[in-house]
Length: 324
Image (cartoon, rainbow, N blue to C red; front, top):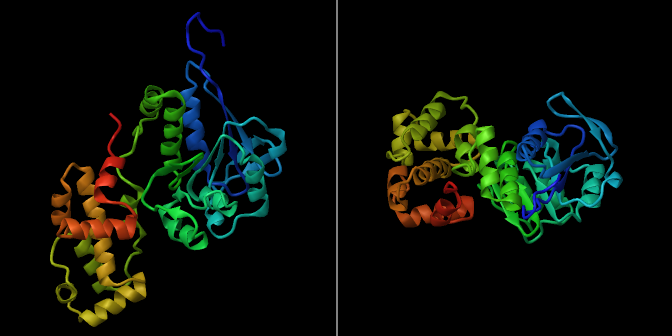
């Protein structure tokens, strides 16, 4: 592309997406669309799909990705993006790990969702901060204890490695890459075009507790959990909660352990933490968030943040403020 005298040269970044049978479609199409929109008017990115064997790759959604190439058919990459799939949390196939290993010398290596399991399998995340889909964060931490897993973050950059939370968070990640490459104005224009946040308010845990809790089979447990979600700051001591659903504290504890594999106290604390996070994002002070969520004091809130999110309320508030 010709340039007018004095006009700055815009670097074109080469980005490869690692795909494979059963890959999550949005993990690929979301980031690709961000880069496509970033190219409007000015070419900024060249993209290529790379799979272990090249050719056509079926996705988990039933649609296929055509025209993928083998890893030895690409070179001089600026960024590699490893897309995710549910099966990666169970086991990373050898051909996917080998494909990533061939391309892992790129200047920047990113993963979407469970793509982090591929990087972890390569040892690339050892001693680094990383994230993945909230549903698989505990598994990542257990399988790879050398990785500092932060389950609440939407995306994390540590050195040349960038990891993101689940599925749609790949869009958040790619917007951050565009901002790093070409500045906030370009990223902001892409976000406007896609009708998404430039920087989404909140971490992924705002989606986790209520959604992750399966519907209770027993009426008392269903009534108890609904009461807590409706008003986390109310008196939900074990005796009070059990009395409200007409069962004994011992029986209610047994229901929580049998159906939700946790205790009433732990589950209630997590619901209250979710509410505190949202209050902080809505502009309330940390003290007000602690009180209105039912956690009570700043210190109790701080301990809950450290225990579940690995951060502090102040850092959480700073991290998820919208870009101006």
